[in-house]
Image (cartoon, rainbow, N blue to C red; front, side, top):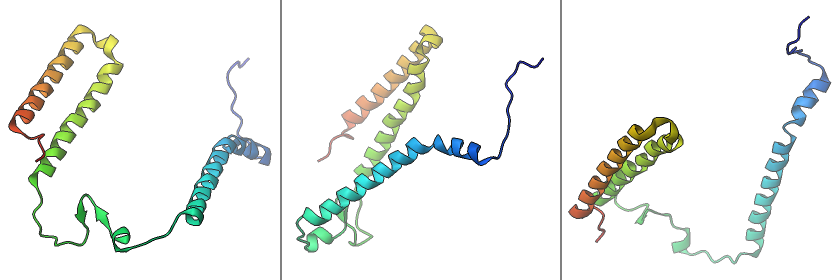
Length: 136
């Protein structure tokens, strides 16, 4: 006597419709989102005042005009801020697994992470003292 799970593969239209019926809530959600998005776009087109001028239709990105001289000087502080952001953003990527497994790693894991955070704090204090965070 076999008391296990029996898998029967059938290719009848009834089984296809049963499988497709499981996707119905996702399709309904997608349709509602599409209808609402199109309704907002249509309402903005109908009710928004239209007053285009040269400044509104020009491309503006990151504080610079898009079609300026490509050889203009670029401030090094942008790179410095980007590097600091990456360092402190990756800190969160290291802290998340630690926070999830805090009970399993015990005091040793906690102390290692505290040393890691102390190193980051020293680095932040050094960057602050050197004026890397000042934007003048």
